[in-house]
Image 1 (cartoon, rainbow, N blue to C red):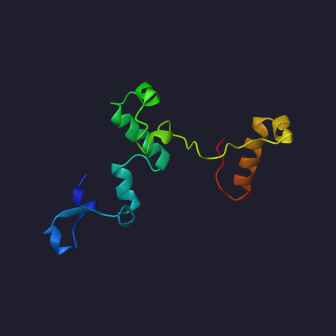
Image 2 (cartoon, rainbow, N blue to C red):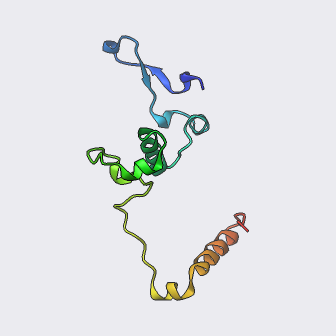
Amino acid sequence: MEEEHFLEMSPFRSDEGELLGKHPGDVPPQILSLKFRAQNPLKAIREKCLDCCCGNGSEVRKCIAMDCPLWPFRMGTNPFRKKRELSPAQKREGPNACLSRALSKRSSHGERRLF
């Protein structure tokens, strides 16, 4: 991948023409997706943690680098996000009822169905 899509000349004279990384918002999404697989921040964090642990998922799980700002997110989830709780009616309906409602909403909006 050509670096010209991701780098630009520094606008500051004190940087003496040094190259800087562009703001990701200035790079077209099609180009970004060619170089970076993760388009979800939690997946990107998980990939970084795997990189730090030489690709070993069990080492990510065992990580003790609690000073790392990514540590709480290393499992690919946001532990600060409130867990969704089902109402008693939703629990009685079961998991397929939620899926059926979601699919019917998608088909009523003209989107393609999954099944």
